[in-house]
Image (cartoon, rainbow, N blue to C red; front, side, top):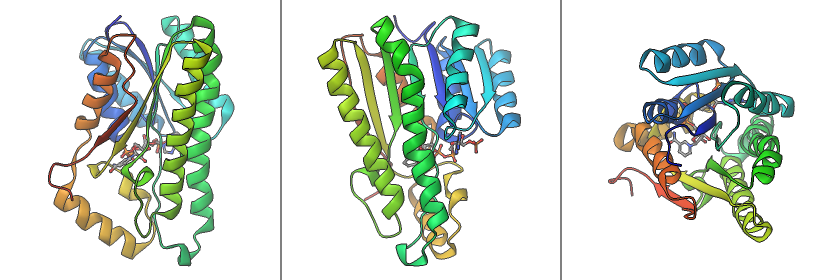
Length: 247
Ligand code: NDP
């Protein structure tokens, strides 16, 4: 089963990497199920996909709320009869120096970037286990491999995603459930992500970096496409992807 007709659930689908992935996979014939908090953006995207001949549904949801994740999966089952792939992509990056003590933003990152991924996994794992098939794809970050000043908590959340995915992969293999896992570690990708940074000097630094190096989120969509396109007995675990000229 290639991408065509696969049911793909995507969180963080209202902009950036999630939005471009939804468009690309729908153009390849996947049935996409879109989740995020901004309903208007999801509605417009769903409309655009349908006008282009694709199949899509959406649900306003917050990944930090377990029930919202369960309802997104329920929508996929009701509309398209199941789930083949879940792309747990929603994330925020309000970077700042630790000394600025933006503790509320630290907690938000833990909630969205770690608990949001856990909620997504919990919502679909029983189904994937029962059907002995499924694919979990997450967006970590290069900050989940090598961190930098200003990225302490963000990097910690993305390291956590790496850990969750690695153990999910090992346990799925041990348990014989045939669940595939792929973790993507992007570098500078031009999206709305910098809009989550409230610390002005951190924002200035990141804006300069992204202006110099940032590439389109369509590039990451192609990586998701590649992971799904592999034969069912092939699991491509990890992708580190960034601009060619970013040191
Ligand atoms: P965007 O800001 O464009 O997209 C983030 C998405 O996450 C939006 O759709 C947003 O939708 C959604 N989101 C945020 N909080 C929640 C929430 N509580 N519940 C549901 N959805 C939520 O940035 P990107 O496309 O860049 O980000 C996608 C992923 O890629 C993130 O995990 C990010 O950490 C990661 N990443 C990005 C890099 C980059 O350089 N851009 C580099 C490395 C990793 P809404 O606001 O409507 O809820």
